[in-house]
Image 1 (spheres, rainbow, N blue to C red):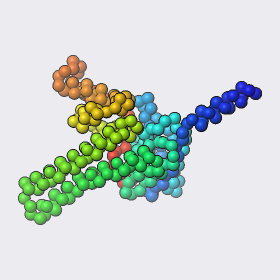
Image 2: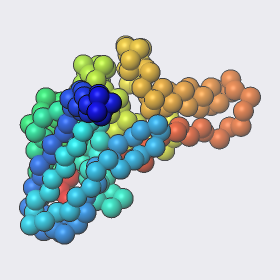
Image 3: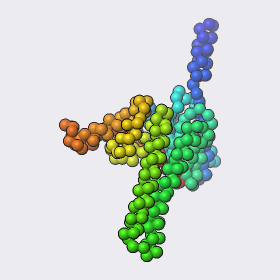
Image 4: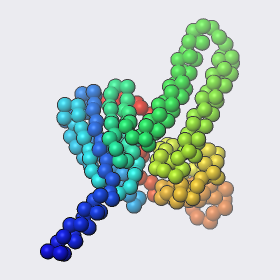
Length: 256
């Protein structure tokens, strides 16, 4: 009897120490109704299913225990829809024609405030194409158009780099820093060292550097850099990092 009581106490203690996540979602995209959604996260270098549920009448729900805060992605089949930070509290997910959003908990609020600002800059860049067409219709000469739009594009690019860099710096020691680092580096065909990445790594805390994805990406990128500079005796083919499938992009693009 005492052994049973002791075991029960241990189970209760372990359960009380674990935090829990609660994700309540709604979708106004009719194509999602009846679909199965998955929460997936990287663990030990592999993308693993954490939870799954069906979209019923535009509603879905995930809940479970969590041993640590982690960055996850919401998937429909094999397509990543959006990033979600699994942390304690009530997380609200909305998927609509204007794009997905997540809120209700501190890290998710911070992440999507950043994503919204990033989207604004992307939209400004996309608008330059429309602006070019209008300037042509207005009879402005091509050289003047090129000079003005190139200057505006450079300003937007600088603002985007500054936004991403400062956000990662501010979140070196939580899951948002490595998570956004993964998002920006997933655009490259193979690991490369850009001035932005070099700057981030020069300022990074040890905890950020020790993140498995960051560590492996940086190792592979340095190896590729050495190969391109002729400093490595290995083959010239670029090294692939041990990276998970591409995460959801840094956009709130409308879902089909």
